[in-house]
Image (cartoon, rainbow, N blue to C red; front, top):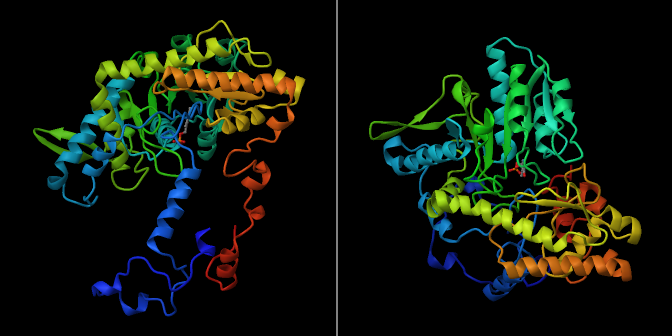
Length: 488
Ligand SMILES: *Cc1c(COP(=O)(O)O)cnc(C)c1O
């Protein structure tokens, strides 16, 4: 590792020699030299290129991570991102009219796509969109002097749904799915009451199944005065074809990083629009861009819940999604959904009937993703969904989402997306078929995989708990000198 190599006298580019004076005040300058290793430029380049080769991303291969939509990110979009650079969020409206026009159009487009009236581009993530949505519901009912303390959540929901409701101090009421993998309507009818603040739902749900009773579901929730929240983190299955607003949803969040091809992962920021219908528009987080004549102005809705991120939100990410939508147009967006649904059902056709993998409601077509259960495989061979995922890494693929949604035992949740060519889908299906066959013949190597990656199998417990992380010698030294705080 770079901290253990090199020697102090080695240098790359030296700024001092250019005669640059540091404008930093004396008090801020360090008194002893920084403990950074000495390397030539070439050594540094090799270090970072090697690191880049050790990681896997959608630019190197398929990332079939169900629910998370890891599609290819067209590179021209990064040019759109660059066009927003060089501006400060405290600039006067007059000097950022172009950026404001983009935000305004994006608000209009996303409202059109979701079938709502207005969107705020404030939330920096899907979870932040959910928090905005529930804060809006809360304030809306507070304004009406209605005490509602229950949030209904489907048992196929993403973990952020109950977590968000919990953050607001609301009681989470889970609604079981029926044998068809759909929300149990009869159960819903029994559970709704004047305590119901709302129902959070994803449609198509995380099993990739379209909630065909959605109009009836909306009626039931609205009949007790509750609101319908659409978790649209992943809209790939119905983009340009069906709209949450038309299904009866009152509030919708979207992840621009997912459906709208903004790169995500690696801890970087995302962007999630929050859209509302009717009176709820008055509660959206600010600022929203309004058009007055030919000018764009910042606007704060009257009953706004406030801000959910700093300044204007993640404008750079919005620019990426903006250019994605602009490039595809309405026809292209629709094609995204059609192709992603086709890719998923193609994979299902290739994998269905594979010994050891089972599909809930096998006769139902899926939308953009599919969940197989490896519970039979685990029982008969000892090879779990986790082992299958690791074995896929050895075969040059990223793993699908596993053990989610929690209602499917040994879940393998696969979302191929629309951007993978048929040859790659075939290779992926072949790799999975090969792994399952090998599980019956010789399971041991699968249970010890991955072997071909730069990091072998990690201990799941250790990997998740800070107290078990072994600090590097350098971190130890810094800690001894009191220059780094203890691990919390
Ligand atoms: C990804 C996802 C979320 C959360 O989005 P973040 O941007 O990770 O906060 C919520 N719901 C569903 C269905 C998702 O797939």
